[in-house]
Image 1 (cartoon, helix red, strand yellow):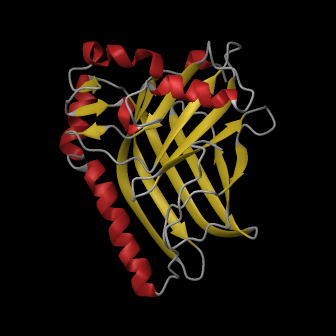
Image 2 (cartoon, one colour):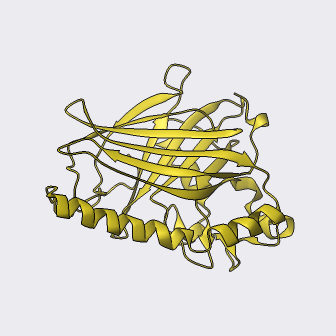
Length: 254
């Protein structure tokens, strides 16, 4: 699919988690998500009254919430890390799929960067994973026609205290266009352990719809963090094995 068909978008949908072992446990919550062209970030405030770049608003995207977490433009960080995998993004179009700050607060368990080369084909995806301890790690996948909709990475970053490190992530999904349909199939010894899905329907990214999202999801990003802790309590109560926090890898992207 050509990047010409991509644009900044607003998705209304859900996040769903299902654990398969050693017992079943699932939960689902409603979210709205943004797909943002990183080249257009500086123009957000001019285009949308309620959405800003690196400044407070009802909704905002801050560079310091991503990448190096020091305010470095996130596109520069993605380009730099892609070089380690022999992927040249100097003339690329990069889109970030994420949750925005809502009234200044955000927690993004996962941000996905879709990277399109000068040939307008998807050539790389960077999965930026965060945990509730404030740590972050990225998984970069070089994309070809063969692995476009399914690629995998060994887990090397601690996310949940109720899931061991010896696991593999299978990333499955199509490019985000009119519909968002993304899955992570986390497996241990090739057996399904956790399925996480992120879905949504494309809705016009407009001032009107942003305002609707604010009144429908006024505390969405806070709810995400709260839900994670509530579900962790349920897992603990059911007897899930607890794994200690481990230090993140020295490299921020693998």
